[in-house]
Image 1 (cartoon, helix red, strand yellow):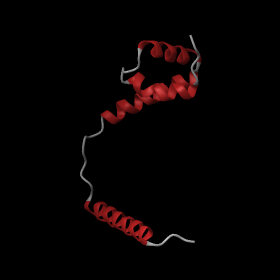
Image 2 (cartoon, rainbow, N blue to C red):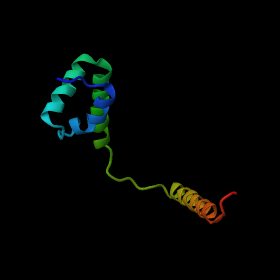
Image 3 (cartoon, helix red, strand yellow):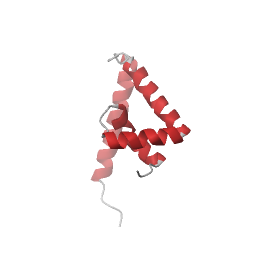
Image 4 (cartoon, one colour):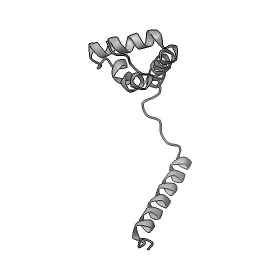
Amino acid sequence: MTSMTCRRAVELLIDYVSGELPAEECLLLESHFDRCPPCLIYLHSYQVTIKLTRQLPREAPIPPEFEGRLLDVLKAARSAEQAAQSQPPNS
């Protein structure tokens, strides 16, 4: 059985939590969790985050004052991007 790095454990986490990770990789990951308290803590915080976000309301209306400010910012960003694209490259 090959060892698993913390980086690889994090990469596999979403598939593990969603039940989409192949059995062999699940065993490797669970073995890693048994030996690596920081990764186990990360797993638990990941699971709690998923649980809490599922409890949030599905959709909340945007306050009108925020919506107006957001549209202004997006329009300004679009204008700046268009202006940058229309300028010739520096030689």
